[in-house]
Length: 76
Image 1 (tube, rainbow, N blue to C red):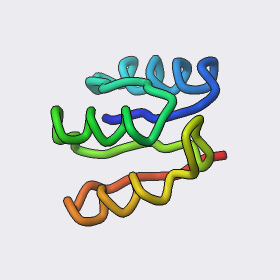
Image 2: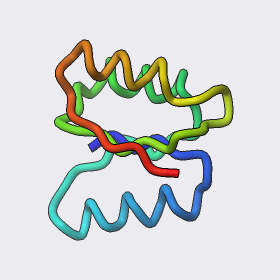
Image 3: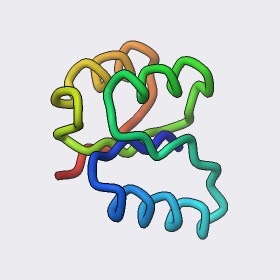
Image 4: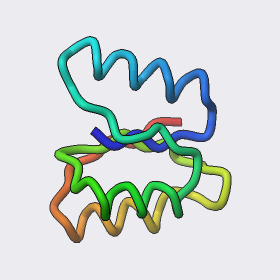
């Protein structure tokens, strides 16, 4: 599961929750650019995305995931 979130406390809590349920986490990372890099390298099964990231809003990353058919949720 790809996790991209600006706030480290929330992002790391999400990562812990995913791992507690047996998932494998890519990230968390705080930027769209890093999220795109991880998505390319790992081909995640799904993603959890913060709406507003350090370098921009999440739109570019969300569109890239849609093109790949990767399901995701957005939180804020």
